[in-house]
Length: 182
Image 1 (cartoon, rainbow, N blue to C red):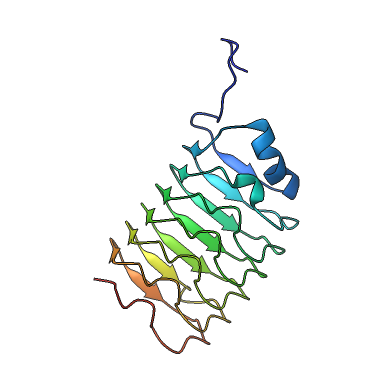
Image 2: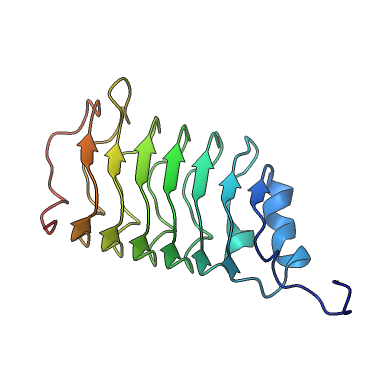
């Protein structure tokens, strides 16, 4: 509760860091009715197995970083998320096989960076994404997503404001999925 005796539904401009499954599970208890986060959101925890506690979120005003989550296999729990004002970074999640859970996401204001996800085979889950304001990075110059065989999931993407880089995804055999990119 704040000084006026009313309960805050979210921290107004703070950053949120979820470092364990209990942090995820406690979020709806500690911040009931919280749907829009203005700051950065970091999801970084080896014991995180699901994101169900974040199911009420509809927007993130700044960056969303989903990094170094060895036990996370999909992004179920983020189905309500429709926009991210900054960057979306999905890096070094060794058990992540697809991006199911981001199905309602339509826009990313900054960059989309997908890199070093050892088990990621496709981008299923991003079908609703129509625009990226910045760059789209799928892999880096010195590393990539070694199991990625297709770009399925990007069929709704029509615009990228910056650069498109697809690098070192050694199992990728075609660019099908980018057909609607203008």
